[in-house]
Picture 1 (spheres, one colour):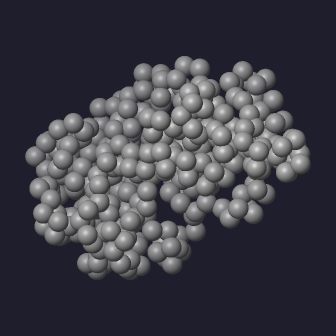
Picture 2 (cartoon, rainbow, N blue to C red):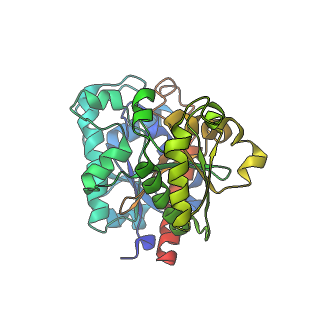
Length: 336
């Protein structure tokens, strides 16, 4: 299957968030320079948003995903799903949450059928989904469950200036520390190393790994995880001929000069990695899930409910996610 020739599919995300707006603006501002994509969404919702914010994006409901290629240059192709109630931008209505889940499941089904080349997910509101019985920390874990992936997939935040992987993701800090193991570091690094070669054309990836504690434990005086968990994992990875180094103190690893010495960083917990990349590249950083049987990217921001009713959301993030998905698909096929 040549996925590079297929359209991408976008999910709706939270109906009351900025996903619809940034998708419409992405098509309006840049569709001539983007690969063809459709969105699984409610056409009435998108028409309302386009009219409300005066976004010049015609909308075309399609019956078949293959119609995306025919209509994309003229209008935004929409694979229709229904909402139970008209959403109020900026205010979550849990009654519409099942449509968010349906959009994701349909996207996965389409890629499993070979109808689309990759998935770009708009941001979801997990609190609203939890009320409907959704029991996953986020997209990454949910997609893995749908696909029946046994090993934990890897969440990488990527921009032109930094690529970072949090070893543990949506856990409390206490839980995150408890989940740091030699095995998890090795498994994550192997997936990252393979993915940097496959999706980013990096022939010999250089991977840096942070410590957990201040100053990487300072020789055991500020914690011993570096000595008994992180360093042994690094030693085993080196024996596997993976170019990995560390553990490094996280507070000195993300400045401009330091970033020249590696291609990607594995951090021990969520904020240790996401704070630097969101500071460096908030609008263009992209979330890409590694370890799935398909490409999935997403903007590296949330639903932005605070600005969803204002019409000021930037499409840069979704544009970056669309472009990265297409680039990764192309690289994957060249490197297979």
